[in-house]
Image 1 (tube, helix red, strand yellow):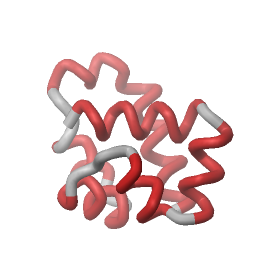
Image 2 (cartoon, rainbow, N blue to C red; image 1 turned 45 degrees about the vertical axis):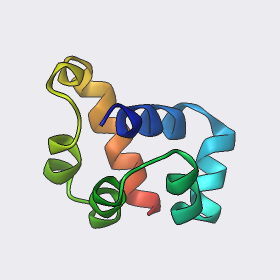
Image 3 (cartoon, rainbow, N blue to C red; image 1 turned 135 degrees about the vertical axis):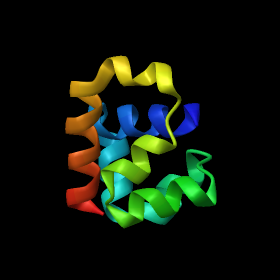
Amino acid sequence: MAQLLKFLKDTAGNAESLTAFQKDPEAAMTAAGLSDAEKKAIKSGDRAQIASLIEPGAHAEGAFLNVTVQLIIQIS
């Protein structure tokens, strides 16, 4: 679960990570160590499904997370 939040932050905040995700989302998610459930959630584009896989304390970063998830959904 911590890997998912780290992946979202890295992808949104690092041009190299974003480019890698845009070129090959599956490879980028695998390299980040995401579980099959986390990959499926990102591929679904369902914010609730993605958020349900992030530890509860992480929701304190809600606004950033919302923007990040929207970005990932748009390019996946």
